[in-house]
Image (tube, rainbow, N blue to C red; front, side):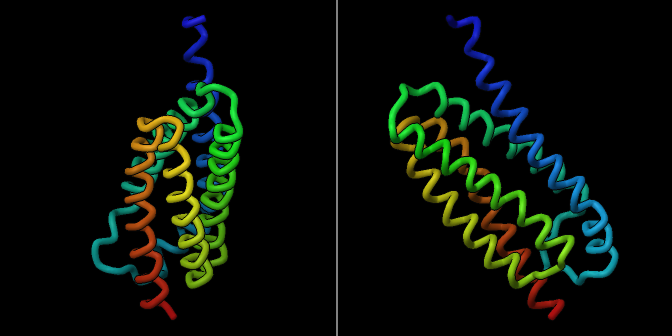
Length: 158
């Protein structure tokens, strides 16, 4: 049985990274336009930082989801995984709203929704697997920082 324990980790990490990759590919043109035309707030990292950070965050997210999927079948587990998928979808669409549509205020509101979902997911994960929850802390922090950047971009480019 232990020889198959890696499969949920592989599945959840690859699935999560694929969602992130698809969002990145679909928002590539918008990202290039953003880099060339949008005034950015102080503390904005160089463009190269974002794909590196997101790749690591998606891996941590996937590992957390895998840990949850390995807990005993229960309503709580189902709720955690449902929350995970919902927040991942919200995450996916933020890139399209922010970069492709350049609807910066709407993207900020969308990001607040994502942050609320992440807190809810964190608390739900914590009840089943503390490590899975802790793996989401960098994601929570990054989304909070992204909120600062998103709000700053909106303020500077109205």
